[in-house]
Structures are given as structure tokens and as C-alpha cells.
Length: 377
Image 1 (cartoon, rainbow, N blue to C red):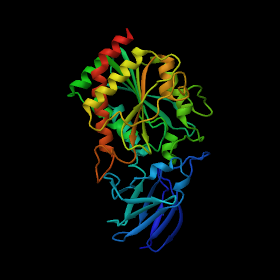
Image 2 (image 1 turned 135 degrees about the horizontal axis):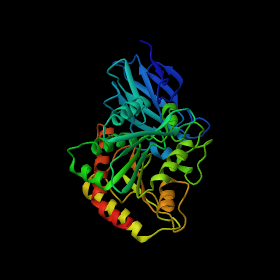
Image 3 (image 1 turned 90 degrees about the vertical axis):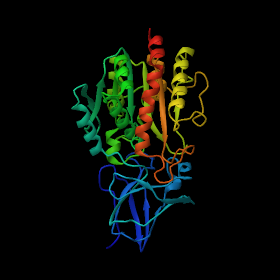
Image 4 (image 1 turned 45 degrees about the vertical axis):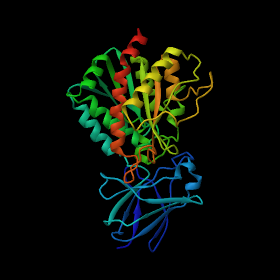
């Protein structure tokens, strides 16, 4: 069979430069109306039993070129089980070497979470008798911003993911969180739903997800730089979600992401906001310490630089929600590579580990829920 590469499907992104023998040269396409690019997802056909060398030629100019060091591409024959391929990076070129077992094989930056899978998730969760589903509004491409309300406790907890659509581990995390919250036999979830009402947006950026973007929506806008002043023209996704937050209030918020370069799971907080309060920080720190105790996949030594007092970026959701609502808010970052403290040589960081970390995050939230409620009073 003749080798062929395509990305003409939900979430796909690649451009073919040349195919010569067993060598395939490709480039990643930029997000629409943006210079961001790093996400790739494509299908290789006709290579069963053939050792191929796949070169992505423009990785040196990508959004986070340091993210390629130590990175291994994801590969799957069925789009359910994903493993890591032999990969190296030099001279701005990412080279992936593989011998596909079948004539239809998929390669991706991380295990994809397509809009089709998203709709399956929405259909399943929305049909649960304890869930209130609503669309908060439409995106620029006309897709719904899906929202779930679960529980009836006094605390207002917001969980939202995938402002950056290429960070697909964030929606895998959402699967794990929703599975736990809707498990009637889970004692932690039962208590949490007594103490809190959960407001959940599993995918903040449907347009970027379907288009195969790394970081932006249909207008080429980074949603996590819009929270100070969202608009219907640039960032309706943020406008819709923030409007609902204004109605419900926010006591605790977690914005779920992935980080290209740091091989660890970590939190980024709201230090540096003008209205920073010690008691607000104390609850954040208590959550972080609880998560360290609960999950060997979480740590606090690696992470982002903490902004100086008064220098928080209020266009980002975590800082904006802490400032606007006095919320204990945070950004959870997961790796595209692996957790170097607890590596998995086959899968690296994976969908399953993302789901499990979500469960641990809810356990940590349960551990600090009373302190959160005390602060609310």
C-alpha cells in the first residue's frame, strides 16, 4: 500500500510536506488567526509492519519549543489505548520512529479528546437524574458551551477545563471528576454534594477543540487572557461562563490545564492579586498539602514563578476569580510528557492517570471543605 497521512477529522492537525519511501515529512498548522501551534493529530495509513521515520519539521518555531525536549509522541491503533513512540528532538525537528502493527495508525501530541467523545460525555452525564444540564450559550462557530450543575450544598465550586483546546488531558481529568461525583457508592462524593454545589464546564473551547488548535478559539483568541473583559465578538465562551459565575458566586475554582515543558503535576495560585488575604491563601495551601498526601502523582517543588504582590495577571481566570469573588482559585497543570517523579515507560502521562488525579483532587477538596465553609461564614 502507498503511505498516506491525513488530519481531515475532528481535532486533527497536520500538513504533509513530502513522503519519500519510509520517511514522512510534516508540519503543524497554526491556530486560525494566530501564531500558536504545537498540537498535532493525524492518521497514517498503509504502513503495517513497515518501520517509518516521521519528521515534524517546524517544531523549532512552535509555541513552546522547550516542550519537545524529553517528549515522546502518542500512538494508537484503535484510538482507545495510547502508547508512547520512540521520539527525539534536534535542530528544530521532532522525529518519531515507529513500526505500525496495522495499516491504520494515529499519532498525536497527547491522547485526543474529540468533540465526538465530548458529546458522548455530555449525553451520559446530562441523562443522570441528579444532574442539571444547560447550555450557557453559543461559541463563534455555533457550538454549545455545555454546563452541569450537581449537588445542593451551600459552597459554590466551579470546575472548568480546556480553555486551551490542545491540552486534552484536562478533559480526561473531567471524565474522572464526573465519574467520582456521580458514583452513589463513593462516600467522599456523597459528603461533598451535601456541602457544595458543583458547577462544571468540561470544555471551555469547543471551537478550538474541533479545529485542532493548541491554544485559541475560532477567532485566534487565548481565552485565558480574556477574564478581565470578555466580549461576544472575541471570547463569548468566557463571557457566558463568567456571567453564570456572577449569578452563582464562586467559593472554590479549579481551572484544569496541561503544561508542555514541566514534567510534573502542579498548581498555580492567585498570589499577587491586589486583594490577597492570608486566610484565602491558607485554604489554598491546605488544599495543596492535602493533595500531596493523597496522590503520589502530585508535588509542590516544580511549578511556575509566583508573581510579586500586586503583579497578578487579572486577565487570567485564576487571578480574576480570586480578586472578583474572593475565591480560593487555582490552575491545575498536568504534563504532556510524564511525571518524572513516577514515570510510566509505556504510556507516560496518560488519560487514565489524568482521571485518577481528578479523583484525588476531589478527595483533597473534601479534606479542606470545612475550612472553606468556615471562611465563607
